Amino acid sequence: MNYQIRLYLWTNYVDHILFMHLEKTKDEFYLLRKPSLRDYGILRLLEASLSSRSSQLVYIAIVFNFIMNGNLISLFIVVTVMGFSILNNPLPSSKFWKFLMSYMLTIISLKFLY
Amino acid sequence: MLASRVDYIIGIHKFAGPASYPRNTGIFYGILADVLLLMALLLHKQYLSKIGAWNYVKTQGNIYKNPSFNIESKNIASNDGDSRNPNQRMDLLAQQHHDVFIYDQSAWYEKAWYNVKKFAYQIANFYGKVLPQYMHRKQKNLDARHRMGHPFITHKFKKVKPGKDYFTPIFFILLLVVVLTLIYWKNISGEDKAQSFGAATLSLDRFSAVQVITLLMILILLLLERMLYRARYVDERDLIGKYQSQPDTYLRTGARSFGQPNAANG
Image (tube, rainbow over all chains, first blue to last red; front, side, top):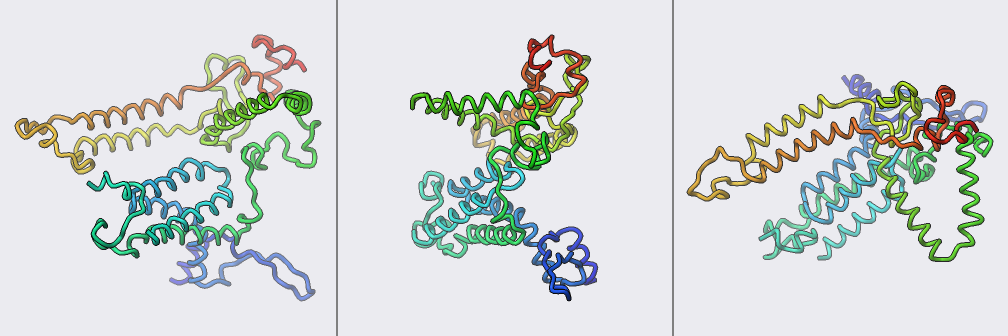
């Protein structure tokens, strides 16, 4: 059962690039290690599959935020994401995510202060 | 009442006390959704930095500058003037000539006007990103007027529409929406028909104005989808292929009839 769940996560959800790493050989060389399923436990794979799908989680959280507080502040985020971020190819730049994070921090602190 | 409160429209309001609604929810439930979003963002940041996309991936403003779309020359080492086709080379020369001789020597208001025009052009081109780009350069010519002479055309976002026709799923989803709108209108909108028509006329089989407008908009959406799929933008420059290499068949069948013999023969 455990193996079945791990295999399912490994084949469907986990981004294998997360487990790529260099490994030291006997001859003091570093070789790129291809990740394999047997090295990782179920919790590690659950965490990795969550973080592999983090962009979808972000979009879900944005929609959830808009459902919970339907106001101009959360509308701005939705419009930014729909009008800019998901159109960006192949992925939105880190600048955009930085901007969104600082925006959220500002909003949370403003709500806290008011 | 709540819709006219500015603090609730903006979103920064009291979570406790007499001015709050719902009364005394508390700061925890008030900012829960925001905190969840922030946590999701932080998780995403951690993922991006783990796979190296946070620090080492720089995306270009123009998608055709991204390596995956740079179809004309896959090899970066030979990405100079020699690897371009004649039309691209002429564009490059014209651009350099403009930069060196015209732009630098023009007055400030001309420079400003040039930049304004460039900005407007960038905004107009932005919507090209909405359409899919992972298509083969050589596409069947769907335009019946030119299909005999040019069976194939080169891909350009203005010209080639999404290849796959999603008419059936879109139609049935919209049909479902229409049915739901007809039957469960009260549940969707919360509109009380008896109230809006007046208590005296309890004709519940009538449609309200908003309902009719909604149905009309759904129909317009359906028509618009068809129109966007069918209608295609073709101008003379597309056939000459300003930024693209043309298949040999095209040059042989003659660009002469389209009014630019030199560009085609050169």
